[in-house]
Amino acid sequence: MPELAEVEFIRKRWNPGLGRVLAGVRLHPRAGVFKTCDPAELARRLPGARLDSSAAAAKQMLFRLTAADPAGTQLWLGLHLGMTGELSVRPAGLPDARADHLILDQPAAGRSLVFSDFRMFGRVQFHAGPEAPAWWAGIAPAVTSPAFTLAAVSDFLRRRARAPLKAVLLMQERFPGIGNWMADEILWRAALHPARRCGDLSPAEVKKLHRETVWVAAQALAITGETFEDPPASWLFQHRWKDGGVCPRTKKPLERATIGGRTTCWSPARQKLA
DNA sequence: TCCTATGTTGTATG
DNA sequence: ACATACAACATAGG
Image 1 (tube, rainbow, N blue to C red):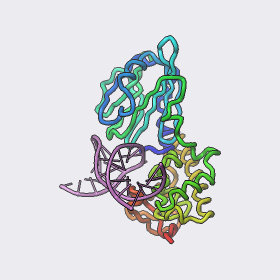
Image 2: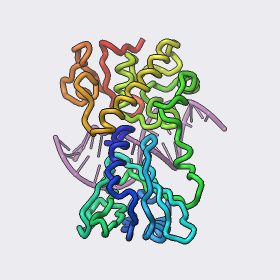
Image 3: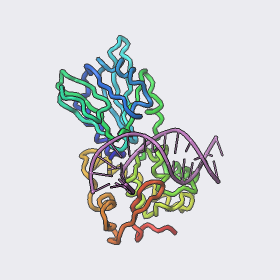
Image 4: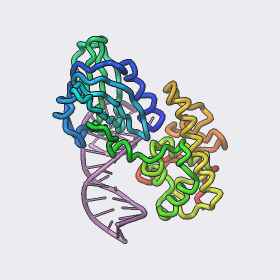
């Protein structure tokens, strides 16, 4: 399920474990979930470590720990939820479930912190040392940050002139955290057809796209990121997967098709190709 | 049986 | 080298 705001909410599920030590770790390396790290290193360094803090950027979560070694090495645990990843807190002593990949045990507090993902598109990443690893430090500046400028968006669209808008909004190197539903929402609010070529937009249209990207991300973070509630019925979000769904603004039928490799919903009365 | 799913990435092609 | 398109990954549910 997770895009920017869902990731931000799910990250906080492990908050009860902050400030506490991990007595042990259970790992179930399967498929590609541990592809970019060494499970043996996690098994060696995590036991005894203290979970200090967490953060989310784009669709990536970071958990910072201090190792139990004399040097107090900094540990960086990255989790990506893929399509179906979940974080949960489970009472201590329960058996591992089928989709569990990583379980951090805090028996003194009577709980375990669990990362599970039945579809296994999620990722565990790991780094030990004082410097932030590239998989964290290299994430593009948030679309809600001052660094997400109109000029940056404009340049990016120019370089992707022949690609459809929908495909480009999903590119994490410029639109970190935007996923399928947020891209549809942004284009609907900006009144831009998802199949429009990026190079065809007028400066005014680029400006609208930039502004709606910031607005949708900020609102989603304020609503879903805080409460995990769905956005209100005035959003396309509530209508896009309904059969016979209707545009909340024009009251005309919505359309769906594959654009940019993903199922896309738009309002033809509002978002024109020409 | 076949299709879909709020994601990323490796590979092929232009 | 760069941009673009798409299959592949793996599983559950309609």
